[in-house]
Length: 368
Image (cartoon, rainbow, N blue to C red; front, top):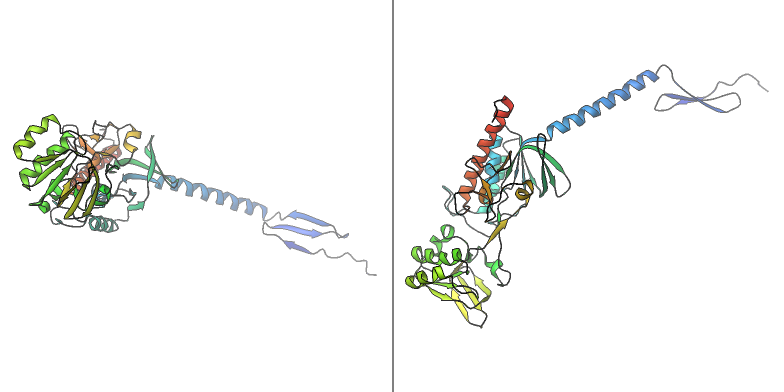
């Protein structure tokens, strides 16, 4: 029998340790002393790279501006900010207030244009600016932090920004007791004679509502667009302040409750609680509104009695660093927030210009 020592076999693992066997066949492992320092160095380099990447991510996730809302106000705010080379994120839930409307008006060069098409073009034009990102998302929370604001999205994502523009708009609160109202809203039932008055000129019209601003809309419509107007107060008496004026203008009043609306654009039927049916070519209804998003209130922005966010001439809210644009906000000196597409776009531009100047002054150390 050959009793010479057997050369121990070995194999190298990925970590450069050596596995060998002694003369009795027992497994023995030891680390390669020449490679051990190199391995430790490589591990340190990997750790440093991870730390650097995380640090960079924390820095790059701080946007200059986050715009919440992708209507005309939000799109224009993002466009103006993007053109100033600001890092911008536009977040949009995809539920615009004027979604039911087929046409918009009083927008220079776009009179009669589709609101949906305007939004599509607006988004498309933002793609020319690589520093502007657009994302379909709902913001569920917003809170101030040392450098700006933290926003939490519905999917749990957290985004950070130095300045915040709220262009979330309002929601029309339609009476659920009137069946068919929501289905015809914007398609035979209209909220604004500025937006739809020309098209309803000479039609037989009804004005639905019993609050003073709603009833007074009948006087305006009768003065401008039609001699055949009836007010349907939906089971309520006419406000005393308006009764005499309506009689003087020859505007009929129907106080029986309206239970259902039927028909289509140009031919609307108002079904009354007693079974009678009023045939009208169009209906105006100034619905009450509420904020589309609770973010402004949760951030502590001052809210006016009508639910609008109070802003100043620079579109600034009462919370530093938070701006608001479009029909979500108004000046305290104005009686109502304008709901026009063109004024929403103008508000967005105004907010973007002045928040950009605020960012510039902060970075330059120029103060307020």
